Image (cartoon, rainbow, N blue to C red):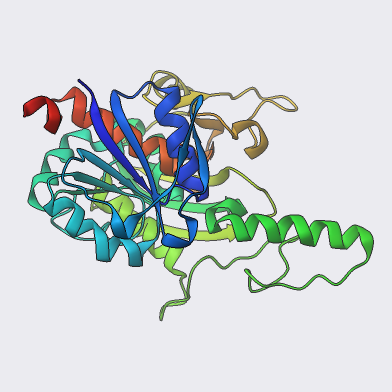
Length: 344
């Protein structure tokens, strides 16, 4: 007998991806319930070849639920995740609400799956920020080989990271440019069409944005607290997939050729790195794919033991929905949870 799974935020970009990937990967679920706010009650969403009608989160009884995959924002998670966990369900949360709680494991299965056992403290597991997830997948095998000292990363993040309204704004502004209509920013601080914006999330006292701060803190929690990292996070006029230009300084020598071979066999990584026109992956090509793509692997002569990488991944999949489902699969495969109905 399979598991009972609830998806909270089922009408959003990530929630819809979660439902699709659950079906794609044949997750062992006997029941999948789509949940959202009351205003979305009755909306139909796809789950494989089936159609589910969204139910109201406020009225749902989680007593029989084994797993709850949440993607409804930090405020909803803060209110509901502890209640759902108290009912006996394991919560896997995509928001930023629980990532920095010492009692909540922050998991990327290819990187720190062993830390998943910590879910028992609160019954909650956190998903990292989308830009962090793809970064640590690429860094982990290199860190194991040569120990990373410092990382400088510049991100090129798609608008889907800010939700459907942001995607709609890019579309409408792009259309307005060609029809000579007014281009009025609403979701973003400045025009996003045919532009780039070095501002994601709020500014902090030191001049960093919170998105940049997240990458620093999450990389340390997931990979190694000794790593020094600085990020500049930029929103670009791309609908899906984030790209990152990454400079890494190691404690030990590591050539580009050796790094390329290490990454070719690393979990979750796919190296496409031909030193010729088009011999790399772009966000367009990564959209809809599960891998973290790594290209432009080369020596960085400006520091001792340095490498430069180009890292691209679908932010809605590996950056959110896929990673959450991989966490759920890890719980199942390690026999850390049992189906309540089966146990009964």
